Length: 443
Image 1 (cartoon, rainbow, N blue to C red):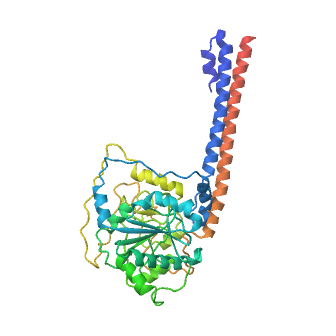
Image 2 (image 1 turned 180 degrees about the horizontal axis):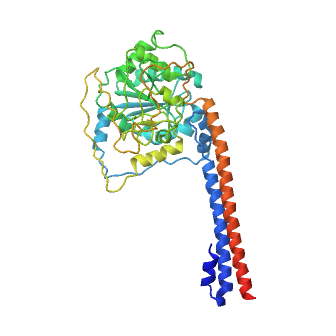
Image 3 (image 1 turned 60 degrees about the vertical axis):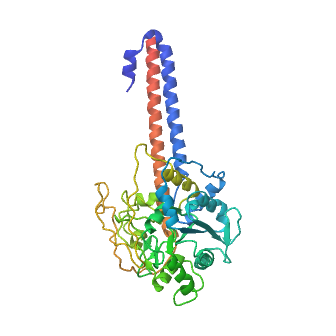
């Protein structure tokens, strides 16, 4: 490969020096290739994200060992935030995050240091006291079976202490990331006295749909009043006691109370509130039998055209990723591109709703609603599913994903090792040829 060229170029008087130099270069290149491969592979192998609460335990353990994340102080004094500042006054949002003592320092503190500070009022609901957050201590036992009771107690507290302090009441988890400015934009035209709630809408179990708990759901002031005053005390309206499926139960309760399940999509029909991390919507699971496609209330174009420019929330966001998203959303800006805010919609009267979005193909050909990524042929008909499960991925699916991932990782490792060995063998052969050439010329 390189030997003929070297033979034609090397001066006999300098062959020894040249041979030594080339041998060193070849060996150094070979060693560098092997080191870079194994370093890269190990780095990739250490991150294996699964879309499941239980499967994120290894991520939480990693984040727990990291040093405390500093609160980002990265101001932009010349940014024009006048529209956002005005919306903060006109659309008052109380955010409450459901957490537990185990997650206070692992997860909750990072919510407070990123998106939580942009709410008008921000609360943590937990069974334990924590002065740093601080928390509202609820008289509820922790654990998944107590989620529904915890949600009811949290909204009762909010109604008693903050009903007149906010217009909208947003519930989120401690692994939810939310862009509160965009939530205010979505809520701006609606009257808080309209009985309505918004979120990422699933269609089984509830005729009008129910909102995914992980992406968060937001209730109007009137919806909160009906829930606490008319719903929780009445077992015919809202289930007494507690169950795992808090998002399904509050959806049933809202329907019984004539609280409308609103449409959170933007005017182009793109989603704004999501049950997974951005990656899993931008690069979706293409399996047409994947549970997600059966649960979705609306047609979607998951893929590069999945998400609104004014997306609001994502779920299963690890603590470190919250800081990454904060940076990408609020600090990173392409120089020379200034996006002017579009005109705000007109205010609606009590009981009025915006018309449904008109679904149109995307402007580009790379990803439109007719592309193959739009696998689901969903309708608004209720899907009959026998076993409700508030977890948005079952453990069986997670195990299946792991079983698929491990053989693929081993296969990739074997292929990379084979290529590295082949490269090393070739370089050694060329080094021997160069050495033989030098020795024969010397004789």
